Image 1 (cartoon, rainbow, N blue to C red):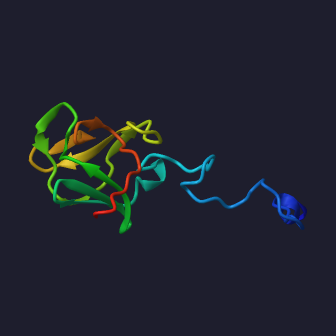
Image 2 (tube, one colour; image 1 turned 60 degrees about the vertical axis):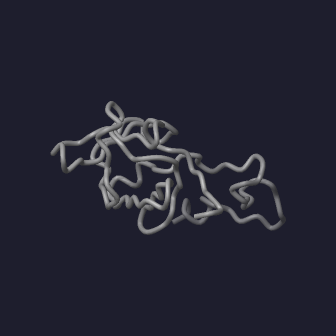
Length: 129
């Protein structure tokens, strides 16, 4: 209890340390990739809107990317709109980090790419979506 009382001391005056920032503010410390290792147990929903692919986790939009969702090594093997689980990942917590979705047609896990960009996409939003 002694430790918990003193773990996160509250400041009596405003300081820059621990200040809440906006994600777009210069110097803000937010991640730049759409999926994280904490999403492994969460459903990832992918839907198409025009030429864009909207990627949601737990119903919240994480990113909007161009082009199809496909297997990294063969762009003709595409993933349809739907809900997927991240089946396997390697260094997921970065842009381009490899991860796999289960592909029904191939009956196996395939490494994912979005519109030619391999792995974990960056967080991008589109005003038109």
